[in-house]
Image (cartoon, helix red, strand yellow):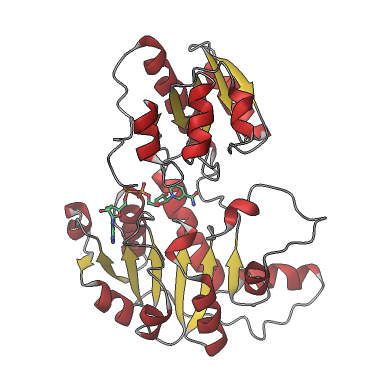
Length: 334
Ligand code: NAD
């Protein structure tokens, strides 16, 4: 079956090709992002494969459907960029990779927190310039601190357990508390208590209308002075302009982001010779206590292998007319 793979990078091609042997799909790799104009490149592809920053709005989906596409295989867990109502109306099926390596993301969130706390990102540059002064690099012991985890699903629960291993008090908030976390010593509290008491907060809930700008002026006002915030989930959980104000006032003591609300115009591309037009993003990068990475938390060998295998298997289920266990319910909320 012909499958057009959008937003394809060399590593996508390497892993998808490697695992495609038993499936035998005819994979066509396209570097462009999927959007209304590029959807036409998938003509006569019964299935397309898309990623986190592709634009799967009603117009794109309409163009895909007109070109003969019936199946969309997301090679990621999130599907907040897919207009599910439009997919349903057009008779398109959408599948995803619900879990590929939750450890990859949870471990990365821990790495960001530790790096930011001990100023390793600053030390790295200093030493390379022959500056061995440690002035300004002081952090705090993580042991004994209170860590707030928002969303204790597959990734958040692993993050929470790792932090209990550091000797932290771990507070959590989730609309569906996870009994495994309770067993590991995590205490569920209200979102307000989590915000007020935590020295560091890590976000692991999905982006949906209820969680859009969960971190904004009012919630920041409830937090400890010098709070650390880590976001490896979705950029729009944080109101970036409010975060900038809180960094300037000292309310936020450290901000580590692997995701950014306007990342689709920036991330996954080499823009080092371009003039970046996003002034909010550029302001963020000027602070010594802000660490931004370009959506790489998932990026481990294990995760890439699992993503490729599950995506190819979802496509095979569609081709064979079998029930695909990873279909997105089209009336569900992302
Ligand atoms: P999951 O569905 O297993 O867990 C999400 C949890 O959030 C669930 O327990 C759910 O009950 C909870 N939740 C839902 N609404 C909530 C609310 N209003 N308040 C608090 N909690 C709420 O998802 P997961 O696999 O653990 O992924 C978590 C996030 O990480 C997703 O947003 C995903 O897109 C993101 N992610 C990022 C990367 C990366 O590379 N940066 C990779 C994979 C996943």
